[in-house]
Image 1 (cartoon, rainbow, N blue to C red):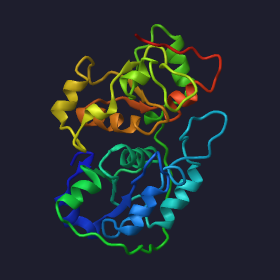
Image 2 (cartoon, rainbow, N blue to C red):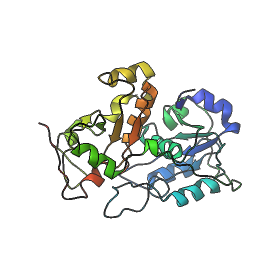
Image 3 (cartoon, one colour):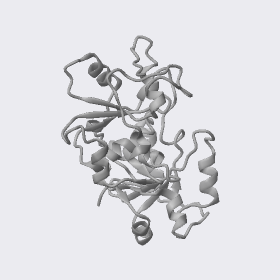
Length: 276
């Protein structure tokens, strides 16, 4: 099994997995929960990007910093997830929000977690069952085992930027205009982290579905599969699908810079590159 499951697989295994609804709208932060309350995949619970999958915004750490690990642990325990639970996450079909949850579970040491390819839209297109019932769960105990090999700190990124001999590539996942510094609708500065290469995250999906392994390999064919890489975006959310795409392609040494560009520019002394 890859990092993804399809609609038919989930339908046939609903009794064996815990399903997580990650639908979210950055322009209306309460929309996802409203959609969930209206209807969702049977048995699913809701995970809010900013309340459950992110920590409090401070001076540094970016716009969607890591959640406090103990709080995230409690959140999982309250929803019946322990270290052996099989988990499937979905969003509206964008891929970014489910990927965020998937990456967080991988980061804390979880093995059996997958993304529903195509998300809720594809589930509805199949005519598969939905419900509005809010499920109840028996509380569990979760043991955290952080996988720091997939997490890039600010200090690590800064060291790479300052080291002209570093063999680690930085991948900026944002749209090209933001990467080039021509347009910045959210952050207070425009441009990208010096040395970063632009690989727009949406190019890894096709109509809400992650492209297959061979197509992902073509996207990143300038690199060897052993090349160490760090992916980032504006706030660590849309970089997650690029992380997934790289893993699907077979890359072995990938990290996510959760703070991303919004964290980088929170340090006034940091340089910013633009490309015309």
